[in-house]
Length: 120
Image (cartoon, rainbow, N blue to C red; front, side, top):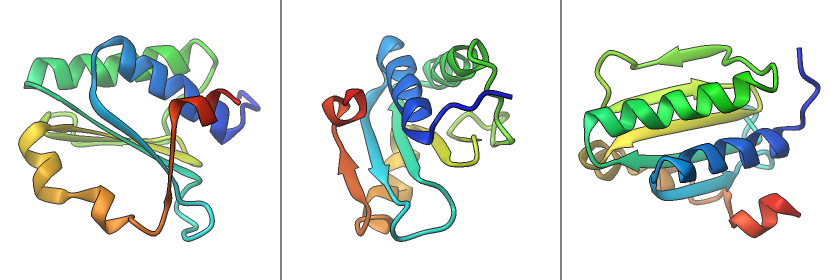
């Protein structure tokens, strides 16, 4: 098992989503307001096959570092897939479902982190 920090995992996940052209990738730091995780990463694809490619990219990138998701939900429907890595949770949506569920609004008390802050 890797001893990677949640911030390092978030950085890798962000880059994996970015590499596959994930849309509007948001990183929300929620450690101060929730015990669920330290970071939520939210992105969407333009269609089901891109959503699938985004999920594969995150799993492969983190998998190469020896980090496997504790739980995956929604793979079949491909309109909202959740990859739970413990301290970091990745949500990949279809465009429509992202607007519908609006996680950014639900977690607005969290702190949105820039790509630059992840690299620091």
